[in-house]
Image (cartoon, rainbow, N blue to C red):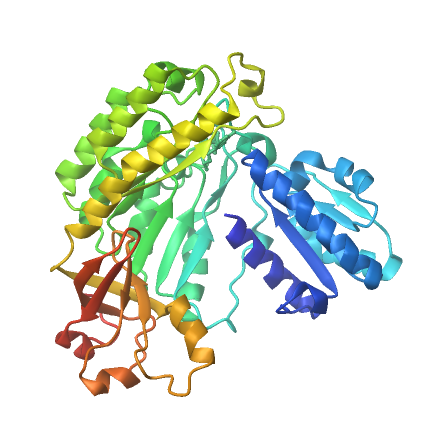
Length: 455
Ligand code: 5AD
Ligand code: SF4
């Protein structure tokens, strides 16, 4: 979500003649877009701002702004604490940012804007038709969250849930496709409650509308709250050809007592039943999840129940985090906090128990042929190419399966492959090797004749 917001910020500043620089030293304006989800993310913001202070001393006309969730949370406090900052703007102020920058340029004033008006500011969402290098793009479909999980800062910093108009979303995606985008990832804190308040169309209906957009090859979305995962959405995976075979379904814990205190509104049995249904209807679907370890009062037994759940589900991959207190959220006041050492130990143990399944789920793909949407040259390759005389030697491309697994491939010995630009195409790749977080393969011969068709 922050990546998408940053893109919208930079697009909004283009009419003011700002464009991206490759290093902070070259910039006349620096906007730090921040995340408040965990303590560590917030600490990073302040240490980064400390480094920018030195830059500002050397270049006093540099305009320095802080946006995003930490800005929303701290507001005026940041401006008081950091005298070298010019601007603090919250999560609902992106549309007002160009005006603020103009005022700062003209009057050399300092500004705080953390207002959170109800509803969605559509002026924020725009398509950059000049940006033709990318294959995939994020698209925000809703903002805020009304779920109030007891550990989570999102409802406080991103406000009440509000959905964008479905036609506007479809319009934005059409524009993206015209500019060369082949895959969109729809963003919302809980996409299952899309349009619940507005009542124009449900999330599965929105997916059907997007599925009809010519030229779009793939649709992904995140995040889905297990309590609201409907049968209609489960069937959408089966029925919509462009909807990718992957769901991120954060469980957070395998213990019912912890889930209750987290206010997640489901039990582990309920969650497991949803997983079963997903797999019954779409046997190949990849499932990933988020976990928090060391929630206040989490006992060894609770933690073992989480390990059991991991063994039962056998996820494709997981993200796991040590619990951290956040300002204003209820769990900050909960008793029986877990020590830093125990949180660390549990995190290591949890990640280790998943490692085996991540690898296993990759290994079963060895020998199979997978449809890959190619995103470009792999990062490793881009680096070596800079110093290489013959850039066509062993070029390595990277893309993803529908199940969101990264596949790197080097075109095979048939030399005509070497001149081909695979970017933005869906091609067939035979998987040769499974690594812990990616796969390696070779394009099959039929890939050469597929052009941009959907396979
Ligand atoms: N401490 C640790 N992890 C958290 N998350 C959200 N709030 C906290 C917190 N206070 C995690 C959850 C969520 C992911 C985006 O971040 O797992 O799904
Ligand atoms: Fe936070 Fe997600 Fe819970 Fe909303 S549903 S409060 S964003 S963890």
